[in-house]
Image 1 (cartoon, rainbow, N blue to C red):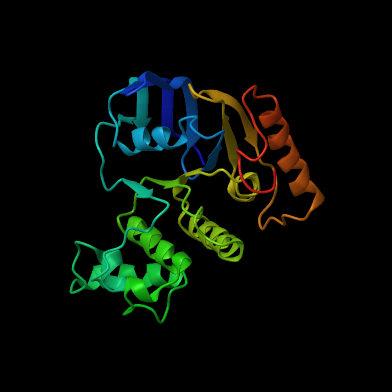
Image 2 (tube, rainbow, N blue to C red):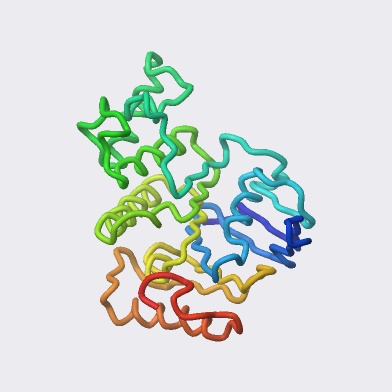
Length: 259
């Protein structure tokens, strides 16, 4: 990590709903270094997903500046991978064809890269399987591999493991860390789970309730691999929890498992 890769300055976002004007994000400033893993956590409705959509170029109606690699983000593109809570695979395509998507497996270089990604996300032997034959965690690994095939400058993940059971979720966290450590892709990961935030991140960004602005950024100085039962891990977990308890509108249970 050597330079500011994502630079957010004075970000303001408002939108109109049936209830009137909603102030989603307020005066948000954040600098992310290349190769960094950031988790974003905060109460429901604080603008976490809105922030990801702006970084992805899916929402361009805002005030302030958002730049990736020194260039303003003006539209979606293959340089910004986006992983949703649901895998959103094509049900009529096999695993390898879902990963390749609009690229032809007849191209030797594409096939080579798809093969490498299948190995990276631990799906060897399932290349010819269809989405209906996969578990939820396996399908999500296909979605991650599909995003990585385009060599994105940044990978944005919006609660991608939220619908998984606890065992599969823990396994997927390990898989994602393997991918990050192998590729050093810059990642922004939204979650409601404090344990997940501490387990994955270089830094944790805590957002206040709407309008979302940064409450605190906590650097996680724990070596990998991390053990959730360790004293050091639990100390970081409680540091994050204490920040939530300082938020006026915080209610126990809002910010995820283990609170």
